[in-house]
Length: 350
Image (cartoon, rainbow, N blue to C red):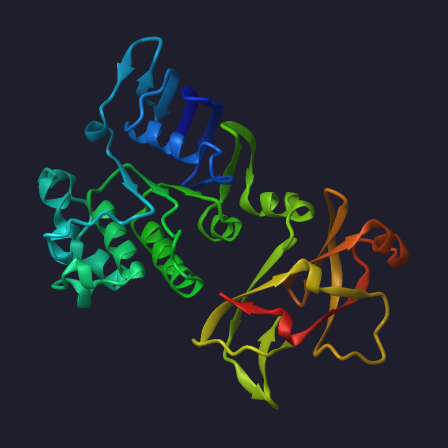
């Protein structure tokens, strides 16, 4: 997908103005509430008319204010998945899924409903009344309905907002599997940095209706480390927990991590703040923390008034953050051997 945008829109006292071009299959739009994310989504989908500018998708002009070109929403073949599922209450799951599919010409039906249902795990739900579905199940049905419309692009506007962390991080693998399996480009809109990193490759950062930056998702997370109370969040995929006295042990990077938490599944995602990774230049003689990792300094980066240290721990990346004085005292240099200490209670399951 290649998307070219140059748009102006005023809504009361709010003004949106952005010029950008992106290419790829997983694009994120990130920013706090009121930054213009949903305004952009509405203009791309054709639900909001810009005041002026241009929208071009894969070489086709969808809107050109100067030439009075405005392709209506139904002809853009852009599907939208909103924060609220907006399922048809009078139809069961099967009929909701097939609503757009049945209205497609047969030549455009590129995705088999059975194949999609298998990827999303919708088989057991097909005859259910939508009123009986959980929040996560409703989101999966809404996504399935959008995908079966065989669009050229799917816009997801805060699709995981309102879900608890357990439901949210269970549905993310389903979302990724769908877009990988069926090759539909995605623009994912969210104010969650974790969601951006898990769902997208490149991210557009908006604030007060202006485009602030355009960067890879991981680069954005590191640039914001110094300005976020939680710092940088390490996302660790851990497998096969086993008892270690009254704690739990996991293999990671050829070493062992000890956690107070056990994954509810065989494989689970944990988050760890960069603030909870303490560095030592030499091996400590003793510590109450249960995790002592031997690592190598892979990269040093700055974020605000903080220094980020990317560690290579047996092939696994781990980021710690320091104040400048601590970085100087430890004489942190790329390639240096260093020890990281982490409390067993610092890990949080997602």
